[in-house]
Image: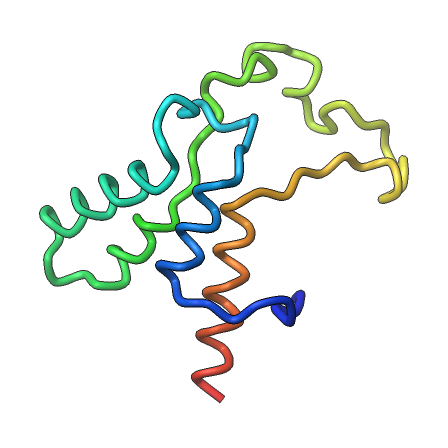
Length: 115
């Protein structure tokens, strides 16, 4: 697991910072990220008022890539996708976005407070 040695901030400060980041893979580019996070979290809070862990999960939720053209492309939707067997980790293409960052923030924060 990575380290968060670059900055110390609250969840709200992190949401504001992530609001400045543009994730080109996100299908909701027309709306500010922070608005989508808050609307989702509020809807979950309204429907599940006693599930505080779910409120946080909704706040930091990821989007699913239904709009991604590769969802309809048969080539990457095979067992190995665009890769050949044993191609090596150095050949793997990976993306890293706000969802992974928020997971890392929460994971490190929760593990640190539990210790």
